[in-house]
Length: 125
View 1 (cartoon, rainbow, N blue to C red):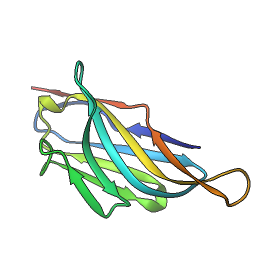
View 2 (tube, rainbow, N blue to C red):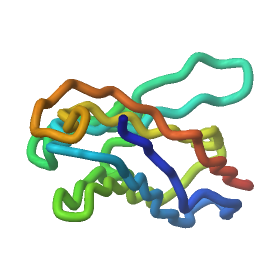
View 3 (cartoon, one colour):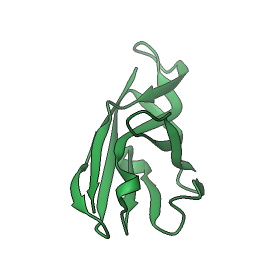
């Protein structure tokens, strides 16, 4: 179906910035929505930011004003720009995408919902 690969995580000091990327590959017809989630040790996975085809966006209260989600539909890639990072932002970040893909060798389309493998973000104080 559709595979997602995240990149851009790493170690950064508090107050720094990182930009995460989520590249989708496969027989993609359209990506209708993309979300970034994170999971810290011992905590449940939580939604950080989401966008519908790069238009409407919503953010967790804890990241509003610091994180920006965007999509490059031509490249089937989503981004999460993270500024003013805090130690509490430390987590594994996952992207999720939903949309349509081409089935088989023709133009029949099906729905997909895919997750990436995650990328570690560590913010030191």
